[in-house]
Amino acid sequence: MDSLPFRPICDDDEEQVSTAGSPTTPPASDITPELLTTAQAAKLLGIGTRTLWRWSRSGICPSPVKIGRGLRAAVRYRRAELLQWIADGCPRVERGQR
Image (cartoon, rainbow, N blue to C red; front, side):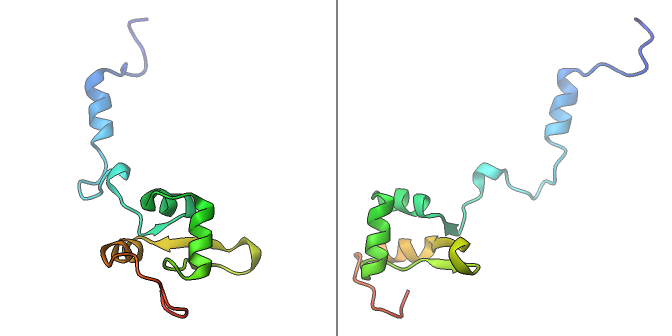
């Protein structure tokens, strides 16, 4: 058993592997998405997803962005738009504006 063809892994090796990534790449937990799913946007606003859909359709809050075509298109909300809307006091959004 003393003549293994490989060296056993020790704790120091694990640290080297975990820090071997690019030094400029932030950890995934530090990345803030600019486009939010309906659930993420609702959580940001402190409301339910159905309320968010209703507000979006009636012009109470900014409308989402559709990515793709047809029924399977992804629907996302712009984080910056939602935060600006909150900072402005949650004014009604006119049709045709975001």
